Image 1 (cartoon, one colour):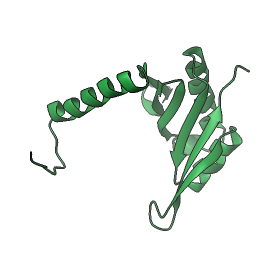
Image 2: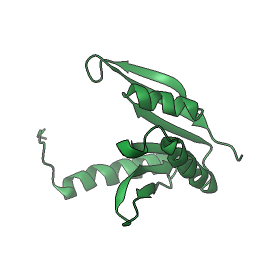
Image 3: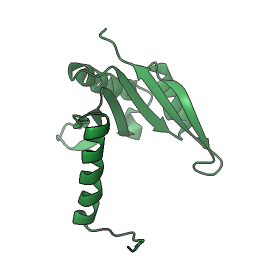
Length: 140
């Protein structure tokens, strides 16, 4: 048995880990039914300039990335993106959503949308905290 540290794993190596963990979890807690979920912001030329990227699994929406271009900030765009993703997640049967951030403005935007902090990781990055937030989803 060998341990090998790398910053450039092959796709097949990552697949071996992913497939093994998925098989384990399927037996342990059942299939995740993981599906990607993306909401795009497109400009007039139909170029993608921002949006949300995440997935749904085990009844939860996880927002991995959320980006609003500077020209659209302060106009409620983050809330619109989250609402669109949450609506799709509920259509998929999700009952909760979670997200994390170390950006103070994003933290306030998520809290305005009803997300509440359930965890904090101080000094990630140094001098800031990474906050983990969740929200119960229910049809409006």
